[in-house]
Image 1 (cartoon, one colour):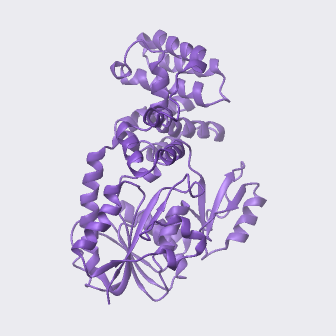
Image 2: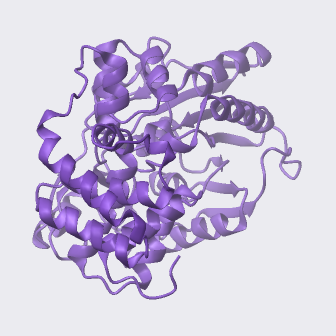
Length: 452
């Protein structure tokens, strides 16, 4: 990363994209660069739009560039290819950016980066794209595989996974959802305020918002004003997707219970459990990394969650410091591929493969086997993941039940509000999808009960 202050939004976006291509996380790099920049609010929003938009729609942008580039994209110097993507995204997706500004700013950035040999090439490709973009031969939805790859920006392996999971019409709808931006959803912290009062405070600050469809603590921000969200310092809310909020409700946690949150960081579900139980449950939150344990502690302090105790632990090792059958409830939100949150972590579609899914399934089963003995007789364990791949969802639960006859799968449909019925499969497991359920992330959850 350049050591000088980043005072150009396009330069900032380019540098972040370069670091993400080298393996960094987009959200971490965005925070790092924007925290030290002198950009105003409008330019900071442009940086965020460029980074997340290009990562989400890289496949679509590359398809368009291929029509106007006289050599294969994979043979281009990586720095040049990222410049082309930066300019092409603005031409194709940002109506508010004039075409001449998109082209000229990218050409000037090439000069600033001392890519002098590429200046003419970048200029020529982008001007050709501008002239010919109306004639790009985009695949139609009737040709579902090319459509998912080149319009919805899904790599081949992810296209196949969507088509295995859903019929073509729904695969198309899910692909389109994953190619778009996610909603900004907040969980109202009932330890500090309530949803009605928080919505009133949002309106007073000129933010447009509405209640979520399923979770009584959820609020979706439709349009932000220039003013800050109210109650940030006071801990009135936590940024959290509605599907993530559903998980803590499904655990059926109650005051006075002993609860284990297994892979707890950054702590959104942990603090939600504390709020749902009114700080009257005993909650132990574990995570593998010390820095992430600190995040849980910071969130608990901000939100006023006094019932949470944290500990650093890698659950690929047996938690031998905990007594067998000593927890009433266990939440295992397992490490996963994150396919259900690709809108929020768009680099995931380009740095994962089916091999990663298989490796993660082994890890998920190992952690599940290690924590299952901790469930009391009659106690419940909720297994959840923010993905939809078969290997990480049904396959995990089916194999676990074969090897652990002391557990049974609960059918959750009869135990929740009828308004939630559409969220569940015939087996009684939860599968949420953004195209079906009001834009929430794609999650899977199964609740297991130890037989008495």
